[in-house]
Length: 100
Length: 463
Image: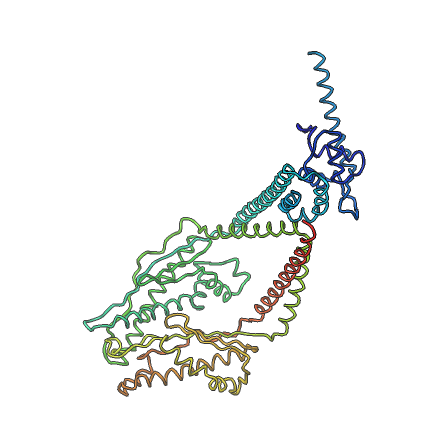
């Protein structure tokens, strides 16, 4: 699990795209809405670049200047793995908190 | 502020801007434009540039290291070479009390060294070394190559070296067996002494015959440092291997990075380069075959008491060369040489005469027919000797008739043929390679310039 999981731009973008394809600005707005984090344009596109290089998201063809992105099957798998890890940590923390 | 953010976005790598530039610009147009956004874009652009450069440097460094290590490993497959060397002193010895001109003696020593070097590195002597059963040199190579070729290789690859610095003469031989290397230098040492004695005797006899007096000088060769038994092989070959390996890997690394970063441009350059090379090779086919014939002549030191005492001037090749060039290479004389029966050549060739060393003259003839190239060289040599003889006599016309006749022997500087004109050396291959290379270079440059022009056009539209 990434130590900055909840603010990791890559996870946030994957989480945003899990809801459907979006272009850069739509992702920025969505992430602010559900994560409470306002990503800078540079941070957003730095993360998009890395996600595309990993093959976890793909760009869709568009005539618009704004290009929509979609999460790939590998991206879904990766996001699920991260969620499982987070869930396992969450359960452990819950169990331990009961004994405090 | 938006304008500043877009300017900061120009700090992203070029290939990144080519892919994401347009949509990034659209995002900047929609998102809040403030100083935080400006800082964010600047920081991420610079980080991307830096990480890519570091990545490229790491790739190149890793490739260079691998190349260097591979070359080092490969260098161990080459047998080590041991160099044995010996040093001699060559000095003139004055017999009796007759004064000698320093210039005369210096020239005599030069002449002796040139002669001895030519003898020791000459075909006959090298063949004798190769045939010596006690040395048994290049046993494996002798199974594959004729002895004559091996002798040529010995001379060309620098295995045998004979150099002079002032009075010191250094002789060395490089071989994979250190004891054999030493044995060869010992053999060269014996030959050097023996041949020097032979030339001393012949020169003395010539002088006596010409001037009826005993010769007042001779050349002495003394061993200063005997042939050594090298303890360790030379390392230079290994370092050359490693340097070549690193340089090759650096080039390969740079090329790979270039192809990875600019695949389209690399492909265009490769295609244009290939087309250029084909065009260059095609043009080179229009050039007729060229052959070169080379001959070497030398101006011998004179055997003359007047010059020995400084009463008559000595002449050098540097003095003679402009005179001879004017006489031989003038259009009228060249036409005469080229139109001689048996030659019948046109003016498409190249004829040259140049001073290779103090008293060494090199004649080069390049022509489309190897036999004609050699025939022209032979003709030039005959002309040179005739014209030199006539001019030399004219130069000394103030001297007595008897002396002038004697000059025709070894009494004066004589222009001798040292190496017969060769008839090999095809130049066409070099020309073809040159044209092909030039074509490829032009093709690559063309692709690069066109790409640059098109990029300049595009960059005004987006980031």
